[in-house]
Length: 64
Image (cartoon, rainbow, N blue to C red; front, side, top):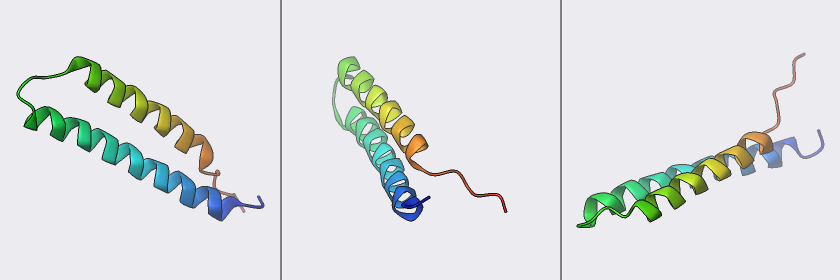
């Protein structure tokens, strides 16, 4: 593939975004006095969406 290194780095970056999004959502629910289900659902759905994009962005390894 022509841009496999760039795709690899973009996929890694998106995986990091997923980790940060879930961490922020979890930490926010611990700090907040009340649990907001709407924010939790949005962060989980967003994380899953970004994870799927990252999964397809990372190129498969070449078998030699």
